[in-house]
Length: 80
Image (cartoon, rainbow, N blue to C red; front, side, top):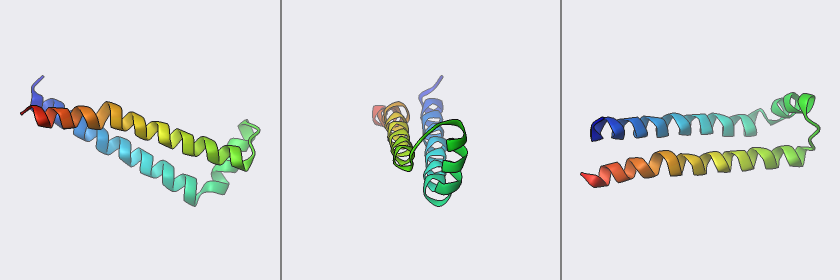
């Protein structure tokens, strides 16, 4: 695999993962009540716990994107 292919791969992975993160954030803010009703069917959660789980999940997902997609992409651009 060439460096150009690896760069393109990590760049597109970053774009796709940030799109997923934006959809998640939009659902968590705009359709919060619907999501809470859906999740409360399966799990007993207070609204505070639901908000905390969404925020923690989005934070961990964003850290994962930074560590596993953006940092390798930047390092591949710095190599050449």
